[in-house]
Image 1: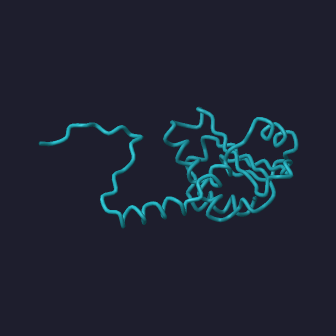
Image 2 (image 1 turned 180 degrees about the vertical axis):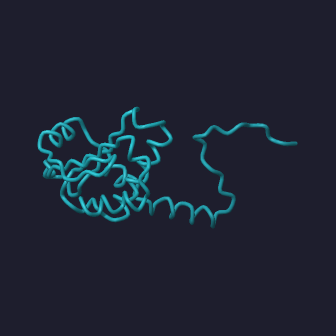
Image 3 (image 1 turned 90 degrees about the horizontal axis):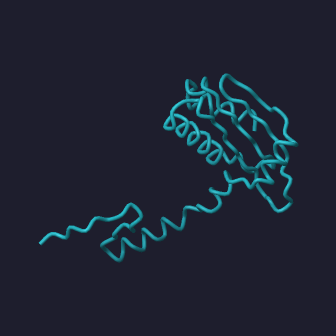
Length: 141
């Protein structure tokens, strides 16, 4: 007889073997999710101070970069805030470019610089390739 229970999208994945469970647990521990999430999370005070102290650092067609030095003494790394309005395009396209910018920021360890960065995304940025985005961030952050 087949079990007809529906799993919710938040249900834990079933790992059948105990050996596989150990591998699964160690793999999930290796992802430092709290650190990576904090790279892109701002509090209201941080946003206000970053905007008030920011200067335009770079601009290419579709992207504008503002930067400000880190104001919080406890903050050991730089953060990235990505702003894309609905005029930019549909949600899937906005989210795609956000994911690309986040991955470039994290994989190239641009967070090691002590600056908070704000990137404005405009409609023309949807035509930029991943390599163009990467070059822009590496040169300007």
